[in-house]
Length: 122
Picture 1 (tube, rainbow, N blue to C red):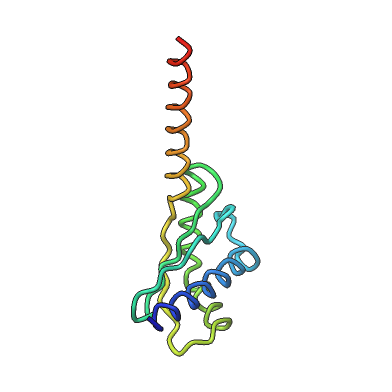
Picture 2 (picture 1 turned 30 degrees about the vertical axis):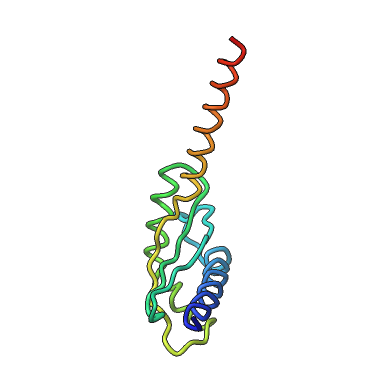
């Protein structure tokens, strides 16, 4: 149980620091309005999956993905300076599509509600 609390705290710290690095330090024009949504750590705390989303279309997503991948070494180096742990986890970026998914569900529910309202009036 202590390990999961430690992983949660470390994940929160990594999310905060990576957010700051992306916002303040990265100068890559490919990286758009990226938000670091969450960090998932392996049980041994040696691997960190950093989930992100971006405001924009598919092209913005692809460009931001390329920019984050090319900046991975710089981001990890900066993390090493800011986060004091015995072993800094290897990092990997993964697109967080939960916002797109919830938006799709919301659209479907709205459409069903609108259809239901038309049928009741008929």
